[in-house]
Image (cartoon, rainbow, N blue to C red; front, top):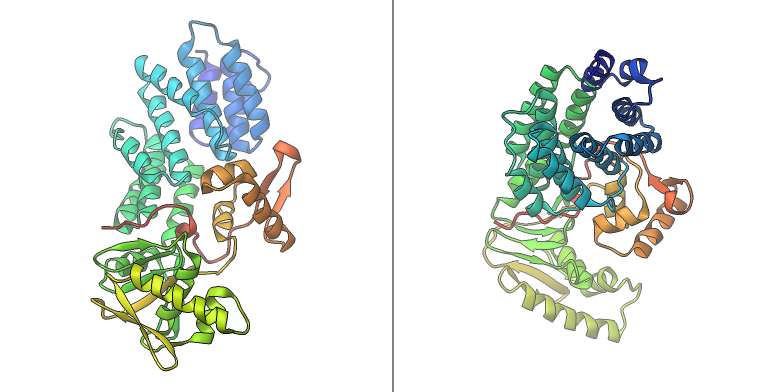
Length: 406
């Protein structure tokens, strides 16, 4: 490897893409093409970066399998940044195996991190944790150690293990300073902000207050009966029941929890559950049926007693009933939660991450665009959607990942 290639690689490692381009911008040999592609990716021109990396992979000879594998890993990272979740994961896995066989442990670890980040983005936390546990960060350089700790922190945040997340971010900050890479330092600072911005609202006794992730973790560890409007769960210290597919029952549970220890008038429950302005006999009959179903589902947590004015929630073990709600109520909050990362998403990638149909996601995006909350650029398959983050709030609890049940 000649001195210019070495100097360009060092510039890229230090987060200086312009310095790297100054050395290899006029060269078209395979190593220079690869470095130019990485530099363009750091500068944000992802389409050009992808083209350069593919050109480099084709230009490397059949015996240069390690160089080609590194190009595949770089292209996978570009796909992840551009939220192309349909990019072939098998190609990345094959590249990682090639790098491991040939002793390139650093780039093999980077490939593993990309796999974990993709799983984390899709809410597949069990797989992400299992894969992350196979990595030993000890021999990694400082820049890669930073990336590793950021992934550890990301998993911990989604699991609501805030102490683990803070410890990982502290290690990431030290490693970023050691690497001397301002881009990594900024990424660590951005990740740290998630722990210091409101993540949810607590509604109890007719009052509301904002909660940080630490507060949410403490609340979930308490003995309170919690109606979780972020994940559509009802839980106490003993068990968890999901009402994500029972919207009427969840609406009733939330209304009863918000009013606890008082009761809720029948007309109010009809309006909350069925969105009816005026309750007639059919609504009242249906309300009795749904209340019966709710009693059956919540029998381990609480009873639902009829009062003179309506219905009231009676917890069996908990001394407190609270509602954990989103910091900002929004019809398409899950879509906005993904877009709030500042990256551009395709509707197909959003559908894959949300586990929904692409048409459902497209309707949500069109509704949000009409309200001026998202914007798009490009056409056809190249169309991407983006939005600035909601100021002052973290969307961590809006992302699709199960809350801990233990």
